[in-house]
Image 1 (tube, rainbow, N blue to C red):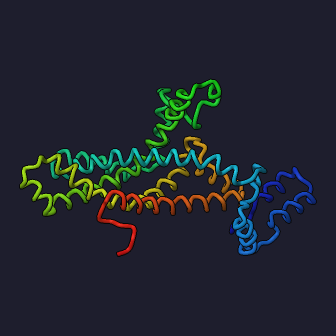
Image 2 (cartoon, rainbow, N blue to C red):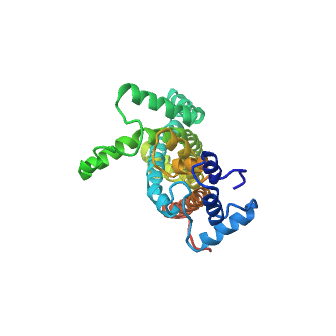
Length: 298
Protein backbone atom coordinates (compact mmCIF):
# COMPACT_ATOMS: atom_id res chain seq x y z
CA UNK A 1 0.00 0.00 0.00
CA UNK A 2 2.90 2.37 0.68
CA UNK A 3 4.32 1.79 -2.78
CA UNK A 4 4.05 4.82 -5.10
CA UNK A 5 2.72 2.52 -7.83
CA UNK A 6 -0.18 0.09 -8.07
CA UNK A 7 -1.51 -2.56 -10.41
CA UNK A 8 -3.13 -0.01 -12.70
CA UNK A 9 0.25 1.61 -13.30
CA UNK A 10 1.25 -1.49 -15.29
CA UNK A 11 -1.94 -1.28 -17.34
CA UNK A 12 -1.30 2.39 -18.07
CA UNK A 13 2.24 1.66 -19.26
CA UNK A 14 1.08 -1.20 -21.49
CA UNK A 15 -1.50 1.10 -23.14
CA UNK A 16 -3.89 -1.83 -23.43
CA UNK A 17 -6.86 0.01 -21.90
CA UNK A 18 -8.53 3.35 -22.49
CA UNK A 19 -8.15 6.12 -19.90
CA UNK A 20 -11.90 5.94 -19.22
CA UNK A 21 -11.70 2.23 -18.38
CA UNK A 22 -8.72 2.85 -16.12
CA UNK A 23 -10.61 5.59 -14.30
CA UNK A 24 -13.51 3.19 -13.69
CA UNK A 25 -11.17 0.53 -12.28
CA UNK A 26 -9.35 3.11 -10.16
CA UNK A 27 -12.63 4.24 -8.60
CA UNK A 28 -13.91 0.67 -8.21
CA UNK A 29 -10.85 -0.46 -6.23
CA UNK A 30 -10.40 2.89 -4.40
CA UNK A 31 -6.94 3.36 -5.89
CA UNK A 32 -7.50 7.03 -6.64
CA UNK A 33 -6.73 7.88 -3.01
CA UNK A 34 -3.07 8.28 -2.08
CA UNK A 35 -3.89 8.10 1.64
CA UNK A 36 -2.86 4.66 2.82
CA UNK A 37 -5.23 4.79 5.82
CA UNK A 38 -8.20 5.55 3.60
CA UNK A 39 -7.45 2.64 1.29
CA UNK A 40 -6.84 0.36 4.27
CA UNK A 41 -10.15 1.45 5.77
CA UNK A 42 -12.02 0.42 2.63
CA UNK A 43 -10.31 -2.98 2.66
CA UNK A 44 -10.82 -3.53 6.40
CA UNK A 45 -14.53 -2.70 6.25
CA UNK A 46 -15.09 -5.23 3.49
CA UNK A 47 -12.81 -7.79 5.18
CA UNK A 48 -14.81 -7.62 8.42
CA UNK A 49 -17.87 -8.55 6.38
CA UNK A 50 -16.12 -11.59 4.90
CA UNK A 51 -15.30 -9.99 1.56
CA UNK A 52 -11.58 -10.15 0.87
CA UNK A 53 -12.02 -8.54 -2.53
CA UNK A 54 -11.08 -9.49 -6.07
CA UNK A 55 -7.58 -10.13 -7.31
CA UNK A 56 -6.48 -7.45 -9.75
CA UNK A 57 -4.40 -9.85 -11.82
CA UNK A 58 -6.53 -13.02 -11.78
CA UNK A 59 -9.93 -11.26 -11.67
CA UNK A 60 -11.36 -13.88 -9.30
CA UNK A 61 -12.30 -13.69 -5.60
CA UNK A 62 -9.22 -13.61 -3.39
CA UNK A 63 -10.69 -16.19 -1.03
CA UNK A 64 -10.87 -18.82 -3.78
CA UNK A 65 -7.22 -18.24 -4.73
CA UNK A 66 -6.08 -18.55 -1.12
CA UNK A 67 -8.02 -21.72 -0.33
CA UNK A 68 -6.52 -23.35 -3.43
CA UNK A 69 -3.01 -22.73 -2.07
CA UNK A 70 -3.21 -22.90 1.73
CA UNK A 71 -3.32 -26.71 1.90
CA UNK A 72 -0.19 -26.94 -0.26
CA UNK A 73 1.72 -24.64 2.11
CA UNK A 74 0.50 -26.55 5.18
CA UNK A 75 1.58 -29.82 3.54
CA UNK A 76 5.06 -28.44 2.81
CA UNK A 77 5.66 -26.76 6.18
CA UNK A 78 4.16 -29.67 8.13
CA UNK A 79 6.37 -32.20 6.33
CA UNK A 80 9.44 -29.99 6.86
CA UNK A 81 8.61 -29.72 10.57
CA UNK A 82 8.28 -33.50 10.89
CA UNK A 83 11.63 -33.96 9.12
CA UNK A 84 13.45 -31.38 11.24
CA UNK A 85 12.02 -32.67 14.55
CA UNK A 86 12.43 -36.29 13.51
CA UNK A 87 16.15 -35.71 12.97
CA UNK A 88 16.85 -33.13 15.67
CA UNK A 89 15.29 -34.88 18.68
CA UNK A 90 17.12 -38.24 18.43
CA UNK A 91 20.42 -36.70 17.32
CA UNK A 92 20.27 -33.99 20.00
CA UNK A 93 19.51 -36.61 22.64
CA UNK A 94 22.33 -38.82 21.37
CA UNK A 95 24.79 -35.90 21.47
CA UNK A 96 23.84 -35.18 25.09
CA UNK A 97 24.22 -38.82 26.15
CA UNK A 98 27.57 -39.08 24.31
CA UNK A 99 28.73 -35.66 25.44
CA UNK A 100 32.30 -34.66 24.50
CA UNK A 101 32.80 -37.72 22.31
CA UNK A 102 33.29 -38.00 18.54
CA UNK A 103 29.53 -38.58 18.19
CA UNK A 104 28.85 -35.27 19.91
CA UNK A 105 31.29 -33.53 17.58
CA UNK A 106 29.69 -35.00 14.46
CA UNK A 107 26.22 -33.98 15.62
CA UNK A 108 27.58 -30.50 16.38
CA UNK A 109 28.94 -30.27 12.84
CA UNK A 110 25.57 -31.30 11.38
CA UNK A 111 23.85 -28.70 13.55
CA UNK A 112 26.32 -26.03 12.45
CA UNK A 113 25.70 -26.99 8.81
CA UNK A 114 21.94 -26.53 9.24
CA UNK A 115 22.33 -23.18 11.01
CA UNK A 116 24.80 -21.69 8.52
CA UNK A 117 23.40 -22.92 5.20
CA UNK A 118 21.20 -20.34 3.40
CA UNK A 119 17.95 -21.90 2.27
CA UNK A 120 18.24 -20.31 -1.17
CA UNK A 121 21.68 -21.85 -1.77
CA UNK A 122 20.60 -25.29 -0.51
CA UNK A 123 17.46 -25.20 -2.66
CA UNK A 124 19.45 -24.27 -5.77
CA UNK A 125 21.96 -27.05 -5.09
CA UNK A 126 19.10 -29.55 -4.78
CA UNK A 127 17.60 -28.31 -8.04
CA UNK A 128 20.99 -28.72 -9.73
CA UNK A 129 21.32 -32.29 -8.43
CA UNK A 130 17.77 -33.09 -9.57
CA UNK A 131 18.47 -31.67 -13.03
CA UNK A 132 21.73 -33.60 -13.41
CA UNK A 133 20.48 -36.94 -12.10
CA UNK A 134 16.81 -36.87 -13.13
CA UNK A 135 15.88 -38.56 -9.87
CA UNK A 136 13.42 -35.87 -8.77
CA UNK A 137 11.07 -33.46 -10.56
CA UNK A 138 12.16 -29.85 -10.94
CA UNK A 139 8.99 -28.17 -9.75
CA UNK A 140 5.22 -28.16 -9.23
CA UNK A 141 3.25 -30.30 -6.80
CA UNK A 142 2.43 -33.20 -9.13
CA UNK A 143 2.71 -34.45 -12.68
CA UNK A 144 0.48 -32.11 -14.69
CA UNK A 145 0.37 -34.39 -17.75
CA UNK A 146 -0.57 -37.75 -16.23
CA UNK A 147 -2.33 -36.62 -13.03
CA UNK A 148 -5.87 -37.34 -14.23
CA UNK A 149 -4.90 -40.90 -15.23
CA UNK A 150 -3.27 -41.76 -11.89
CA UNK A 151 -4.92 -43.97 -9.31
CA UNK A 152 -5.31 -42.68 -5.75
CA UNK A 153 -2.14 -44.47 -4.63
CA UNK A 154 -0.20 -43.13 -7.61
CA UNK A 155 -1.37 -39.59 -6.84
CA UNK A 156 -0.11 -39.86 -3.25
CA UNK A 157 3.21 -41.30 -4.44
CA UNK A 158 3.63 -38.61 -7.10
CA UNK A 159 2.86 -35.81 -4.62
CA UNK A 160 5.40 -37.18 -2.12
CA UNK A 161 7.97 -37.43 -4.91
CA UNK A 162 7.49 -33.75 -5.77
CA UNK A 163 7.39 -32.84 -2.06
CA UNK A 164 10.69 -34.50 -1.16
CA UNK A 165 13.22 -31.84 -2.24
CA UNK A 166 11.48 -28.67 -0.96
CA UNK A 167 10.58 -30.38 2.35
CA UNK A 168 14.16 -31.59 2.84
CA UNK A 169 15.50 -28.10 2.09
CA UNK A 170 13.23 -26.47 4.67
CA UNK A 171 13.67 -29.26 7.20
CA UNK A 172 17.47 -29.22 7.10
CA UNK A 173 17.65 -25.46 7.57
CA UNK A 174 15.46 -25.49 10.70
CA UNK A 175 16.96 -28.75 12.03
CA UNK A 176 20.16 -27.16 13.41
CA UNK A 177 18.36 -24.88 15.88
CA UNK A 178 16.23 -27.70 17.32
CA UNK A 179 19.22 -30.02 17.55
CA UNK A 180 21.25 -27.56 19.63
CA UNK A 181 18.22 -26.80 21.79
CA UNK A 182 17.53 -30.49 22.39
CA UNK A 183 21.15 -31.21 23.26
CA UNK A 184 21.27 -28.39 25.81
CA UNK A 185 17.98 -29.37 27.42
CA UNK A 186 18.98 -33.03 27.59
CA UNK A 187 22.31 -32.22 29.26
CA UNK A 188 20.48 -30.20 31.91
CA UNK A 189 17.79 -32.85 32.38
CA UNK A 190 20.31 -35.70 32.76
CA UNK A 191 21.88 -33.87 35.70
CA UNK A 192 18.62 -33.71 37.67
CA UNK A 193 18.12 -35.60 40.94
CA UNK A 194 15.33 -37.86 39.67
CA UNK A 195 17.64 -39.10 36.88
CA UNK A 196 20.29 -40.00 39.46
CA UNK A 197 17.61 -41.76 41.50
CA UNK A 198 16.54 -43.79 38.45
CA UNK A 199 20.14 -44.82 37.87
CA UNK A 200 20.49 -45.81 41.52
CA UNK A 201 17.47 -48.10 41.12
CA UNK A 202 19.33 -49.98 38.39
CA UNK A 203 17.26 -48.87 35.40
CA UNK A 204 18.99 -49.20 32.03
CA UNK A 205 20.53 -46.06 30.57
CA UNK A 206 18.38 -46.05 27.44
CA UNK A 207 15.20 -46.51 29.47
CA UNK A 208 16.22 -43.56 31.64
CA UNK A 209 16.91 -41.45 28.57
CA UNK A 210 13.77 -42.23 26.58
CA UNK A 211 11.27 -42.80 29.40
CA UNK A 212 12.30 -40.02 31.77
CA UNK A 213 14.68 -37.51 30.21
CA UNK A 214 13.36 -36.95 26.68
CA UNK A 215 9.80 -36.26 27.81
CA UNK A 216 10.96 -33.39 30.02
CA UNK A 217 13.66 -32.06 27.71
CA UNK A 218 11.29 -31.79 24.76
CA UNK A 219 8.98 -29.26 26.45
CA UNK A 220 10.98 -26.16 25.42
CA UNK A 221 10.95 -27.36 21.79
CA UNK A 222 7.16 -27.62 21.89
CA UNK A 223 7.04 -24.09 23.31
CA UNK A 224 9.01 -22.97 20.25
CA UNK A 225 6.44 -24.51 17.91
CA UNK A 226 4.76 -21.19 17.15
CA UNK A 227 8.09 -19.46 16.48
CA UNK A 228 9.36 -22.36 14.38
CA UNK A 229 6.20 -22.20 12.29
CA UNK A 230 6.94 -18.52 11.67
CA UNK A 231 10.43 -19.36 10.41
CA UNK A 232 9.05 -22.11 8.18
CA UNK A 233 6.38 -19.86 6.69
CA UNK A 234 8.99 -17.19 6.01
CA UNK A 235 11.23 -19.79 4.40
CA UNK A 236 8.30 -21.12 2.40
CA UNK A 237 8.19 -17.88 0.40
CA UNK A 238 11.68 -18.55 -0.96
CA UNK A 239 11.38 -22.34 -1.19
CA UNK A 240 8.04 -22.29 -2.98
CA UNK A 241 9.31 -19.70 -5.44
CA UNK A 242 12.49 -21.66 -6.24
CA UNK A 243 10.74 -25.03 -6.55
CA UNK A 244 7.61 -23.57 -8.23
CA UNK A 245 5.55 -25.07 -5.41
CA UNK A 246 1.99 -23.71 -5.74
CA UNK A 247 1.53 -22.51 -2.16
CA UNK A 248 0.83 -19.35 -0.21
CA UNK A 249 4.47 -18.24 -0.27
CA UNK A 250 4.70 -18.26 -4.04
CA UNK A 251 1.27 -16.66 -4.37
CA UNK A 252 2.19 -13.84 -1.97
CA UNK A 253 5.51 -13.21 -3.73
CA UNK A 254 3.79 -12.99 -7.11
CA UNK A 255 1.12 -10.69 -5.66
CA UNK A 256 3.82 -8.36 -4.31
CA UNK A 257 5.47 -8.24 -7.71
CA UNK A 258 2.17 -7.51 -9.44
CA UNK A 259 1.04 -4.90 -6.86
CA UNK A 260 -2.09 -6.99 -6.31
CA UNK A 261 -3.14 -5.27 -3.06
CA UNK A 262 -6.26 -7.33 -2.14
CA UNK A 263 -4.33 -10.58 -2.61
CA UNK A 264 -1.33 -9.33 -0.61
CA UNK A 265 -3.50 -8.13 2.27
CA UNK A 266 -5.51 -11.35 2.49
CA UNK A 267 -2.37 -13.50 2.27
CA UNK A 268 -0.65 -11.62 5.09
CA UNK A 269 -3.76 -11.88 7.29
CA UNK A 270 -4.01 -15.63 6.68
CA UNK A 271 -0.31 -16.21 7.39
CA UNK A 272 -0.70 -14.26 10.63
CA UNK A 273 -3.67 -16.40 11.64
CA UNK A 274 -1.59 -19.50 10.93
CA UNK A 275 1.08 -18.22 13.31
CA UNK A 276 -1.51 -17.62 16.02
CA UNK A 277 -2.89 -21.11 15.45
CA UNK A 278 0.65 -22.50 15.79
CA UNK A 279 1.04 -20.84 19.19
CA UNK A 280 -2.30 -22.24 20.36
CA UNK A 281 -1.36 -25.73 19.17
CA UNK A 282 1.96 -25.55 21.04
CA UNK A 283 0.15 -24.68 24.28
CA UNK A 284 -2.29 -27.57 23.80
CA UNK A 285 0.56 -29.98 23.06
CA UNK A 286 2.36 -28.91 26.23
CA UNK A 287 -0.77 -29.51 28.29
CA UNK A 288 -1.23 -32.93 26.67
CA UNK A 289 2.38 -34.13 26.99
CA UNK A 290 3.28 -32.73 30.40
CA UNK A 291 0.72 -33.64 33.13
CA UNK A 292 2.14 -30.87 35.34
CA UNK A 293 0.74 -28.25 32.98
CA UNK A 294 -2.96 -27.55 33.23
CA UNK A 295 -5.13 -25.29 31.14
CA UNK A 296 -7.26 -24.19 34.06
CA UNK A 297 -5.96 -21.70 36.57
CA UNK A 298 -5.26 -22.71 40.12
